[in-house]
Image (cartoon, rainbow, N blue to C red; front, side, top):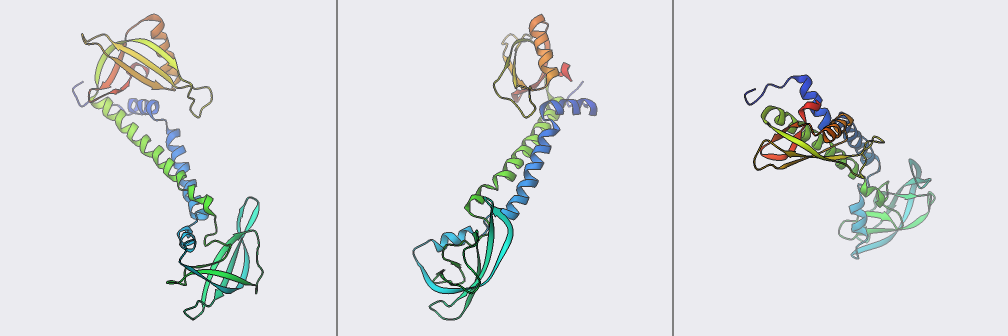
Length: 250
């Protein structure tokens, strides 16, 4: 068929399932959704304030706890507690703020030292508490949506490459010369990643193609052709020869 080919939808879907199963998109979407929820609930959004208060150019004043309330969050099976407090900085006036601890430390009405920035007393916190509901361990949570996004980007890119391959790819004849199972295993138990190596036979310069797959039908097909030494067809992208499929397995 002249290039670009008109690819039937059934054939396109079969090829895309081989290269990028829908489960990858489901996993990626799950990581993004779960990660977004966790980041919204547990990320220490005021961590930068705590870093400012850890600097040397801060002052201290005696403050008073106004309210004490348990939150819905627990860390290491200990309830996170929210405090509202007030104090009077050296510059005068009254400042109110809030902070958190893991486990109850103070009671309402208690006098507690407050650390604050001298140039901006509104940046303040009870000594020994933190400015965010979550502690610093929550800093890693954005990794979840980030990894999910990588899955989704790879899934979309892989499916786009397959479409281009079917529409613009070139056909070559080859022999299967090796089918090797790697030690890597995907999420589905018992499906090892296999590396299939085929040697081109329709060109004087030869050349090898290497395909990686977990698809049982592709692995069985390659093993059969390796044993019988019957030629196979390879559809490849001349601009990116590493991108290739065995169209007879679709």
